[in-house]
Length: 180
Image 1 (cartoon, one colour):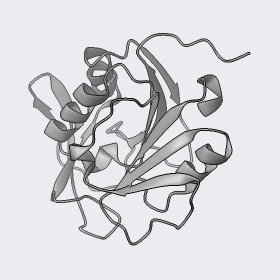
Image 2: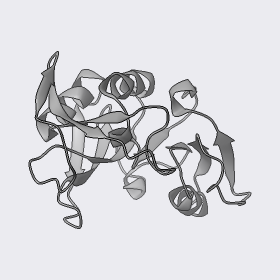
Image 3: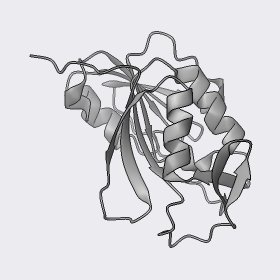
């Protein structure tokens, strides 16, 4: 998905072990990687590493947001706040959705405001949520609505089929022409 976007400054949210951040830096991106936990961040000088809660992150100056494996660990309010903050910046999103095929224990579907999905009880391990006990997994339709309402009229979707409820999205504020 990075090849579809002109190279620039990328922020990797919830970077974890940093593999994506390092790969993007090797492809010529200027990368800042943010995670609330420092224990898995590698020592690689090609990336600027920040230990911080992503809810406190300033997104000005970034050309692309990578949100891989983080969104589904957030409560609905935090998901919406994140989308408001990154609106207008192309985003690569990898997340679980409540598509009826989950093997994870989800709550009954609920509608909160205009958003439908299920809650997932966070296991509390060191690789799951940060300071919340549950997270919200929107339905695919709701996720598309959330993205559209927050400035992403173009959403490309890729289903990996390795995990039946986890999907990749490229959310664009407008159609971006690939580099020559």
